[in-house]
Amino acid sequence: MQAFKVLNGKTALLNRVNVDTDQIIPKQFLRKIGRTGFGGDLFFDWRYLEDGSDNPDFELNRPEFKGASILLAGDNFGCGSSREHAPWALSEYGFRSIISTSFADIFFNNCYKNGMLPIVVSPENHQMMVKEVETNPGCSFLIDLPSQTVRTHSGKNISFDIDPFRKEFMLKGMDDIGWTLQFESMIGAFEEKQRQQMPWLWLRKDYTQSELTEDSVRSDAMVQFNLWLEDACRRMPDDYNAMTLATADNTGHVSARIVLLRVADDAGFSFFTNYDSHKGQELAKNASAALCFFWGPLERQVNICGTVQKMTTEESYEYFKTRPRESCIGAWASLQSQVMKGGRAELEQAYQKLNLQFSGQDIPLPPNWGGYRLFPSEISFWQGRASRLHDRIRYTREKTGWRIERLYP
Ligand SMILES: Cc1cc2nc3c(=O)[nH]c(=O)nc-3n(C[C@H](O)[C@H](O)[C@H](O)COP(=O)(O)O)c2cc1C
Picture 1: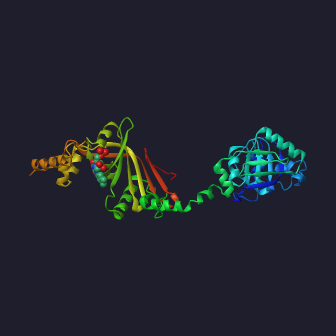
Picture 2: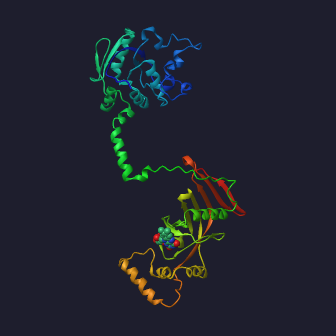
C-alpha cells in the first residue's frame, strides 16, 4: 500500500449529503473481489448519460476538477452497504483523501485499509473550504499527515484528529495485514512452541476411508449396527465394545462414562453395572439414555438413544457367572461411585475379606449389581468423509420398521 505523508492535490467538490456506497459504486459492478477495475464505474448513475457519454451536470465531470486527488464531500459520506468496493473505486479514480464533516463508520475504516485518508472537519471549516473551492474551482489543498493539518487554497491551516495507530499505518503504507506481517517471525516462533506443547491443536485429519449411502445400508438398524461392530472387532480388537453411556437425572443434570457393550440384538444394547452407582441412580429417576461408539481406525461413530430397563435377576446372574471370580468379588467389594474415605486400602481390605468369606463357594450375585438394556428409538451411523463432508444416516424406529434418513454432517 502507498504510504501517505504529504499530499498537495487538486480538490474536487461533491457537496451532497448522505452519498451512499451504492451511488459511489452501484451494485451491478460488484462482480469481482479484486481491488481493481472499479474506477471507471465510480458514481456511474450520476456520471454518465444514458448513451454512455459524460453527464455535464455531474460535479466531478467539470473540467476544473479533472485529476483531483482530494474529494471535498458532504455529511455522512459512504453510508449504506458496507462494500469495500466503494473505497477501491474512489482510490482507483485517483482520490487519496476525502474531507467531510462525517463519514459512515465502515466506509471510514475501509478508507484506511486502502491508503486513502478520511479527514473529519467541523461544519464551519467545511463551509469555509466549500466556499474556497466554489470560488476557485481547480484549486489545491495541502494535507500534511505528520502535523495533522490541511492548508486550504487561501492558506488557512485546519487541524484534524487521527487515531495514532491509524496514523502510523498510513505513514508506513501498511494495512492491517501488513501490520500483522511485521510480526511474522514472532508468530512463527509462537506457533512452533504451541505445536510442541499442544500438538492436538495442530491435528488435521481428513477422513477418506469409506462412504455410507442410503442404498448401501441395511434396512434394519440392528443388522447394520452388528455389521459395523464386526468390522470394529476385526480392525481394533481392544475395547471395540467400549461405549459412552450418557444419563441424566430428573432435574436435567447429565453425566457420561464408558461401559462395555455385551450384546446388541432386537431387545436392545445390554451392559452391566452397579445399580447403586451414579449412573444407576440417574437411570432410576430417568430411563432415557444415550450411547456413543467411536471407532477411530474405521473413521466411524454410532449414536444411539432410547430408554433403559433393568434385566431380570436371572438374566443378570447368567452373565455374572461367566465373569472371572476376581471380578465377581470386585463387584461385591466396590461401592461404585461412593467416596472412599479410607483410601485404596479400604477397597483392598474389603476385597480380601470377601475373598475369604466366599472361599470354596460360587460367588452369589450382589443384590445391587446387574444388567440394563437400552431399547433404541434412534440410531445414527457416521462415516467420516473428506473435507468434513461426512456421511450420516439416521434410523428412527416406527411401528412397522425403521425410517432411514440422511443428515447433514
Ligand atoms: C474401557 C472401560 C470399560 C468399562 N466398563 C464398565 C462396565 O461395563 N460397567 C461399569 O459399571 N463400569 C465400567 N467402566 C467404569 C465406568 O467408566 C465408570 O467409571 C463406572 O461405571 C462408574 O460410573 P458412574 O459413577 O458414572 O456410575 C469401564 C471403564 C472403562 C474405561
